[in-house]
Amino acid sequence: MDFKQLRYFVAVYEEGHVGRAAERLSISQPALSQQIRQLEQNLDVSLFERSSKRLLPTLAAHTLYNHALPLLDGMQRAREALGNFKGQALRTLAIGVLQTVHTSLVPKMLERVRAAQPHLVVQIYELTGLEIERRLLNGSLDIGISYLPPRQPGLHGVLLYEDELTLVIPADHPLREFKKVSMSQAAELPMLLLGEEFQVRQIWQGQLANLGRRPQVQAELNNMAGILDSLPHTRLATVLPGRSQQENGNNALLWKPLSEPRVPLKVGLVCRDVQRQQATLELLRNLLEDVMNGPDRRMASTTVLDIQG
Image (cartoon, one colour):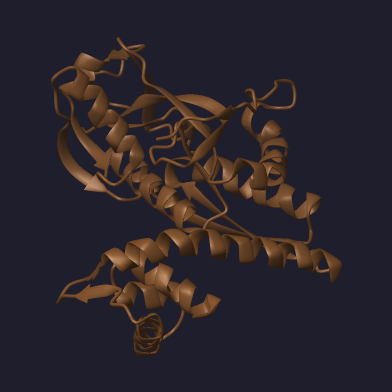
């Protein structure tokens, strides 16, 4: 058993499918299957029960997984530490970002990171909130930019800024003269929404559920820009973070605050290991400060939100 086989095993365990694991590892399926078989032979245990659709981990696999994660994490830390002795400052920072906050953060963040840390190679992935948390837990992301608090145990958040869910309607919508719209009024509106995998949609559905209501979904798109482009040609409404208006201004759309109640949103940096990622968290927070609030205002406190889930 070696670290490469452990890494391959962890990928198969987490994906539950050889094809997806092979894609994640950038190797062929036959090569991955061979490595898993060799690992089973070396350990003299069966790690997976094979079915037509997915691989089901055995009790031995659960045990090995719990031991493998700290071993692989320790090896990665050792490589990073030894890299300093070789003068190899170049490293990669993988960041997962929600689509609904992407446009207001990423372009300016990339430029600031490049100027402050030219040795840092930044990889940006636009993902759903659930996928960001899954990848943080399996180690394929370093940092997430998502809504707080994290939903998965073992993840921690640092607040960047606060926002609120806002109703967006075409300029000729019947509610165009309203200064704000109550939740009960919004619940009656036919809507064009992001898909159910998006956290904004989940937050909206949760708020309506508190009122004993369900969203009146007429259409769905999995792209925020597509929704904003489509709305002026419909009589539908949508809900998006209010901050999105700054980057997606459109005279054919009106942004109406929601009330009774308001729906606050907290956006922050999310990671698995606060102590290990403290320097990166501080770097990103400082670089994003003027992006968030402008040069004359201070960003929210950097207190770690130690909420487990």
